[in-house]
Image (tube, rainbow, N blue to C red):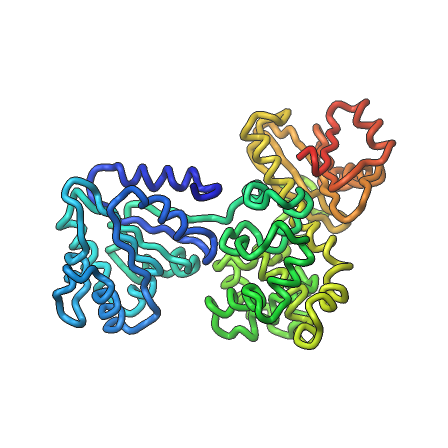
Length: 452
């Protein structure tokens, strides 16, 4: 069974069981697990799979025709797409699945493919499910419909394969402690295609040294490849990403650091956000808007963030030092700060999970954070009546202290939020005064990493 994809698999099977032939689009980032999910989906069904290439239209048709079973391959050297589709073996009494992976390569070089595909599906009104699969999120969401025109009306469903949540990592790496899983999540994100490169019999430091910092390792250049594969003018994008990773989260900060015009930076940030490499974070909407930062930019892809935080600004040392030396000099002392940002995300995911299970004191409708000029509230969760859970997440300090609790209440006052319930998350322990306070105040909940 593919890890953490129960709802996606159910959706695909529902589409398959519906009457009639149909076309659907499945898309998501590379390594997010699309192909593994589709393999699981078709394991008991007749299917045909083709992985499109970045090639000319003529070469595409040649390669696809060549891959068809030999007995069906008595056709021209460069068949039309209609001829190829008609040559795909099909079952008489069972619906056949046709998967065209990275289908954008076909669309971009041929203006007739979708029309031929639609016509072919209409010929076989009962026994086909065509799945168009793509790793190009930006293209699917922003360019595909314009490119294929009226054929877009024939698409009956879209399934976006999102990154897995943190909890799936616990199941994938049984040899890691909870703390190690959070650290691995901070580096790799919820992308199972990257998880396979880490070994839960090694420490996180050993995994980073062996599989990211070593020049022969599979993830050595992966952070840069993700950017290079989707974007032109990588010099500009690298500059902006490196600047964000260095702590320049506001537009004006980026302007001062990069020297690019604000208009230029905004255009490039928009492209990065469309590819889900960067996100713009707004504070939770409260009456304390005067005390908030307007909007800050963060790198949302975990491995890209790790690359531009540690590898990109120290490439010369990366080439001349051993992985162990590099880790000791550039990573070890800052790692807690880096992971802290992702611990906040993990805590939000647990709030969402507990809400789904009915384990919160209120039924939460909205979850977010408050980014103030003087402080931050890591977790805000509200119900329809405005009752509020606020929380902070401590990763970098060995003990969460009573002062941290008071600071959270100060930030809530600045945000003009009523703290009906307070959740304090800590990687390890809480000081004695805070523990005593939690025994007296029933709306104050202390949650250590192990309790999560």
